[in-house]
Image (cartoon, rainbow, N blue to C red; front, side, top):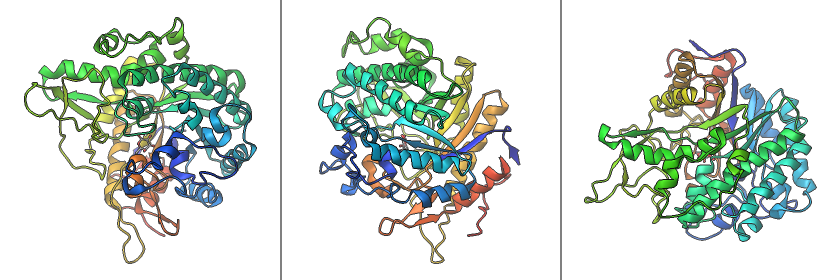
Length: 472
Ligand code: FCB
């Protein structure tokens, strides 16, 4: 057995819009994802998050599943438009009550609440006022962080400001495959900055009001970028700049990298960055959240043959890769998940070791890792998802390897607790360790859930991944 450190935090993760449903109930306001999913043609199958997994009404059942899994933590997100519709003004008490029930329900089961403030559901009114490309959105985000800290800061001990600001900025405002579906590269870079600024302001606000022992964090989907050959070093550097250092720079080092500013000079002069902003973005963090699914492989485009752009984030007509016009995204060897993402856990070990090298004093936490597969329900009702078990086993081994080599990794959260609304892919992509029947909303443990329960109980990985424990 591969053992994990004592006190290693095992958890599962979800996000509000992907699971809650109850989209227009109890005073919740609309978010950019309601607008996006209600726009014909933007989400596969015309799916919306209107009902999602009905988690809002099935809270007790889902808390029971978490307790039976034995996890020490649950990562969820607070829906900004549920607690503060419109993004300004008074709190919506019914929305606050829901999170009170969730947090108290977790604590009474000895499960630590890990709250993400922003998992992409910007109140629509704030987008109508310009969205993340506007500075005011960062200020509204800080207010919201303070309000949440005041309400829940006595009980929530781990806070994540933003989830994957890379997606919010570039998929939301450059390629437009995510809400709010804008394709404006200059606005996307302004969004990058205001997300960084909003993060810093939110950390300051939380520090002022939350429990002094609270762990403050942000979750980044850092790209582990490799070049096809040594001659592709400049392509690697460019992609690393827009994908990773655009956030790591301000948040952890207090400055934007010079090469990022130079690479994007034809798009923007970055004049939206005001004196003191990057110092504000750079707040001490207690832990850095890392989401990892697969590595990225790039090469210099020769300018002739059709340029490959398949980076795994849906090929829109516009590219999310600003300043990378001469970069190709190369196909990677399989096997692949249902998302078309290649399975390569070595990227996770390498990424964790890079972070250890660059930020030796910042502890790490895997806040998402998991895989979508086209699961089948067998005649006996069982879901034998051995490929997901294998994926999780490989990636947990990769985490163990990084820890062995010195990385300070504090925890791991499977994406996801249950099958849910996978953004523009709708419900077709199933990431859950628990299956959700779309007709009845019935929850069924997959083999991977039983397997994960055993890993959590043992605080370690069994030697072989093949036999998933199943006794349900
Ligand atoms: C991440 C998101 C999460 C989920 C997984 C598959 O980018 O944070 O909500 O959609 O991908």
